[in-house]
Length: 381
Image (cartoon, rainbow, N blue to C red; front, side, top):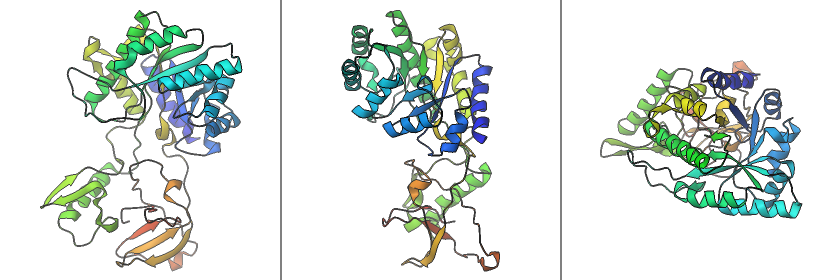
């Protein structure tokens, strides 16, 4: 039932800003059928990213009208989505062509609802780091996109633009919002009728029980690279940090476990940001003035404090360098699918408390795959 509390926290932000729209729970962060069935009892949608995830969500009680198909899509996934009339979050022109081709082969009469994902946001005030990306149509191609959508208005029901932006830099968030809302305004002026904007997710979780403890750990980790003889990370990897001539350089290769704000608080902040390119209106004011809806995909933050992952201990051994390794009957993908590492300490449950013994120099937890990188914890605990 914790998922209901998380849904309510986001819905309260919608209500506070007097905006309409839909919150999409995602199947990606967790494979729990129980959690998804519980979410299906609330007034939320579900974001799926594969053919099997779509079938899974249908089986958990979501109907097509509450579903959104995202991610890279093969033909089978697109076909099933079109057959059910599911909203498709389209990523590129070729995908749009495939949708039209499949519709023709199915002799589909009803329009297929689509969001169009944009990327490559630009600003005269702020320079973005020119990293390439694998998702979305560049904002420079929207003229071509509008012409394309104009030609297939009888086939595609354009719902609006979408994006997903993980940056925690406020200025970059503002630019992304200005771009997506500006292009939405342009779409309206060109005669389209978008229902709203989909701003994706990227909302944090506070994994640390005490943010001060977390801050202390990060500082201690950096200091260990400079002064300590004993490593706090596997093979003294530094988890993204390194010692260069006495200076600690690099960036964390792990999630921020103690952010200042997280989850629904981030959405509240986002909706309250003033947008200089839009006469300093807030996003909430813009949506209300233009009668637009807001769609979000909170992802893992919807599962904050929800459930547990259990791993049985297979054995305890010493590594070649004398480190204590606790091998678990699970692997790293059982706990975390993110690119960045998760450093939360496990809870130890002993069958026989009398046999418990402290590992004086700490331990590392390893997984059950025969791969050297199958580490459950790269940090010593």
